[in-house]
Image (cartoon, rainbow, N blue to C red; front, side, top):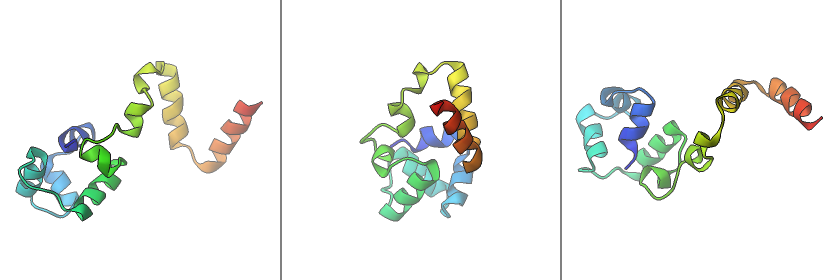
Length: 101
């Protein structure tokens, strides 16, 4: 299970994650340790929160970020991608039109 890794990347504590999905911190801890099975509704909620698939959460596939080989991008490309992801649709359309020229 990838929960601990995703939670740490998000800079959240177990208590914060438990509050987000409306369970106790001790139950969330058991999810991370794998000592308690997570029901499908909670799995879906966690996958949506972390923007990954349920399959990724349970270890059956790579995340979209991993499959894109982010480590192959130069710092300048990473910065450009981050800025583009933060743009509104109007600016994204203008950037796309500029790239197409």
